[in-house]
View 1: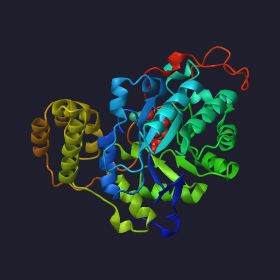
View 2: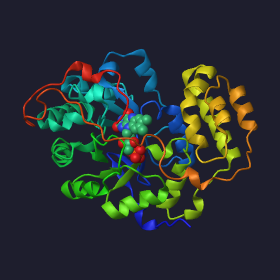
View 3: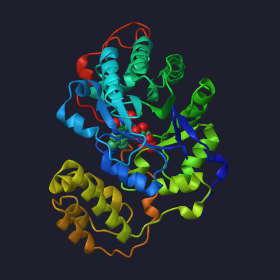
View 4: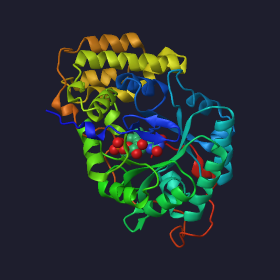
Amino acid sequence: MPTASPTVNTTLPIGPHAVQPPVVLAPMAGITNAPFRTLCREYSGGKGLFVSEMITTRALVERNEKTMQLIRFDASEQPRSIQLYGVDPATVGKAVRMIAEEDLADHIDLNFGCPVPKVTRKGGGSALPFKRNLLRAILREAVAGAGDLPVTMKMRKGIDDDHITYLDAGRIAVEEGVTAIALHGRTAAQHYGGTADWEAIARLKEHVPEIPVLGNGDIWSADDALRMVRETGCDGVVVGRGCLGRPWLFADLVAAFEGRPDGYVRPTLREVADAMVRHATLLGEWIGDQSRGVIDFRKHVAWYLKGFAVGSEMRRRLAVTSTLEELRAGLDELDLDQPWPSGADGPRGRTSGNNRVVLPDGWLKDPYDCAGVGEDAELDTSGG
Ligand SMILES: Cc1cc2nc3c(=O)[nH]c(=O)nc-3n(C[C@H](O)[C@H](O)[C@H](O)COP(=O)(O)O)c2cc1C
């Protein structure tokens, strides 16, 4: 039987927004668009905070068409959270000012956690906090440009075990007026491998008592979320891969923090199939083309079906459907009375890691030099 304690049902202040319970959907590129956020919010009863996928600041200030589409929110989304990725203080400042002046969002999160080699090779993403002065300049511009909008940051522990940056970065964030910090308890070198270091989350909480610290990494169930809060003292949790193909985890998270373990959702395959069709439908409406919605949905199929008895041939077929009718027809051929399988719990999504981090030449020589980052560190990145 799941355990839950009402003692952790606290409020997470993100500027003027009181997030209760303190649960946040992690930004995930290609995943946490308006349809997925809407699904998660429906399961949570509107509680929690749901962050957009990452938007690059240069594309935003250039009003790139695709980017402008990515930042559209559903009318029900409140507060509207945008995650920005940028490497140049002036561009970040412009992007934040644009969001504030044009009322495009209610909260801005800055991404300093991306471990993708094509980004770190230029000094961007999770390589950037190593350059303390550059990090400070970006945060300063962002906070100044945001006016009354709260600015938060999300980061990893550092580049690798020999180049840990999160404590310095946390202090800099406090000094520059950042509202809250989320820490993914892995280094860039770990990518998604190994286990997240929750002790680091506890250490950050002690190091920056002035502002809320959000813990992130390896929350696969609502009970994991409660355990993270208890073990680290963090002020809230950020949940990513655990929600892939499982937006109802948000119902569990809310129930857990409210001390209602009987509110945990364990859908049958029939209910999962309905959720899949709804997700694909919402994607189609959002994209403005039903077939493209179903095609975009393909990447979610395996996650939704995880642990259920569905043959590999049928899994393949469902992952290449192009219309809602095909998707529904395929799902209707399954044994839909299957209960939620225990094999569906536990890790899902990317779990590999331990790569060498590719950095610009000489990057690690001086943490305080004022090197800038190549503009191309901002290109078309995906991930954190
Ligand atoms: C497919 C995918 C896309 C991601 N995209 C982003 C992103 O755009 N911005 C970001 O800060 N982190 C991104 N992340 C990292 C997650 O936000 C989160 O920090 C990480 O998955 C660890 O949390 P988890 O163990 O709950 O998944 C991404 C992760 C995945 C798996």
